[in-house]
Image (cartoon, rainbow, N blue to C red; front, side, top):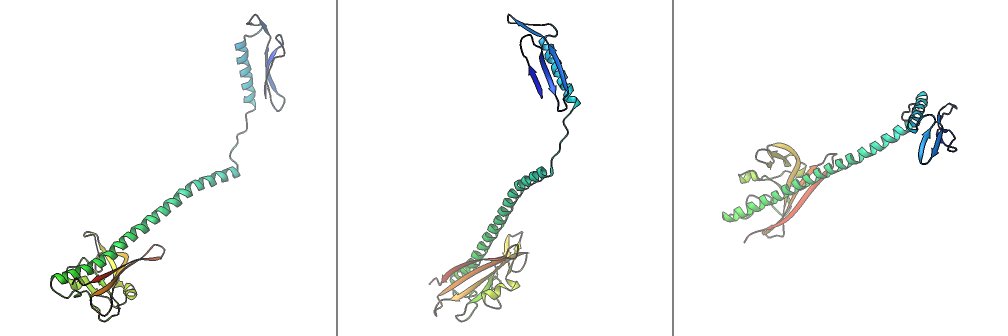
Amino acid sequence: MIKFSMISNDTPKRCEYVSGFGISARTSARQIYSGGSVHSDGLKIGTFIENCKLKIENCFALFPLAKRGFTLIESLVALSILALAIVGPLSLASTALSAAQISRDQLVAFYLAQEGLEVIRNQRDTNRLNGAIWTNSWMLCSGLAPCAVLVDGSKDNVLERIRTCSPPTLAQCLNQSSSALHYLTGEKLYTHSQGDPTDFKRAIELEKIGNEDTEYKLTSKVTWVMKGGRERNVILIEYIRDLD
């Protein structure tokens, strides 16, 4: 504890440092105040203050404060706060990356399903322009029962572009390795025959509507397996009719 005291104008002014052990450093000078000026019978006030400061500093130097580190509890609290500050953003970033990957796969699957329908529609138009039966080369199933086909838009030959799937049902066709799609990096195309393997599979179900050979229901389905083993799919349905 540091104490400054002045009892009266002619009482010694003291600057003390009192430690917990009763040790003190003391400097005094008699002050006489008169007429607004300061007189000293010993030291001038500036020297007096400097001496007080030196004495106090010497006392503190004799008894320095013990060096103190962090306790175990303080360290655990600090680590907990740090962990919360790090885990939150990391978890958010991981969720964002997972959502971005799901959105990307869904977009690719949608376009693949749409491409399958467009291949069938294109073949119908080609048949009519050539004066052929509108279901020629794409309606490869007989009877009213639905059947599945595989389409490959990268092929020029119609027999390779549209071919039947065995077994003929949509679910069974998608379980076959032949329904798996591959990616041609240079051409940027998906095919059933060559290229880098992907997680996507595609098949199209053809179903005749009514007894007349004038309308068909097309169901294009694309499936893929996400990380973790969960299967997802995109299904597009379109009704196609003869142009006559």
